[in-house]
Image (cartoon, rainbow, N blue to C red; front, side, top):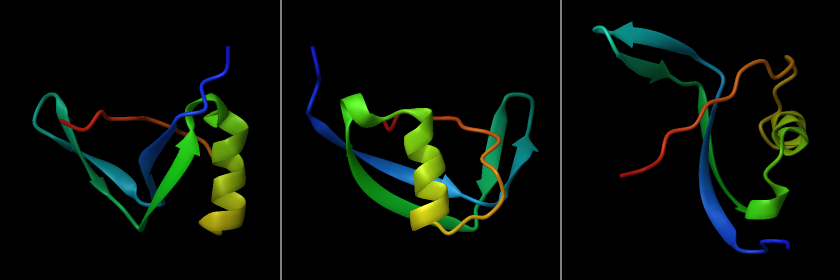
Length: 70
């Protein structure tokens, strides 16, 4: 069963992570984009395509993480 609902994603790209304290990190970002993707289309290849086409990042995608908004 496919899920065609769209959700808004806030994608941070470029930059680096800075450790704060014992368990927290701060993201020092270079760019941010909001996109609306269908839930069933959120796959690794979609992020790779986003980096190349939308964010214009030429380096290979190496890391991915997520954080649920409160």
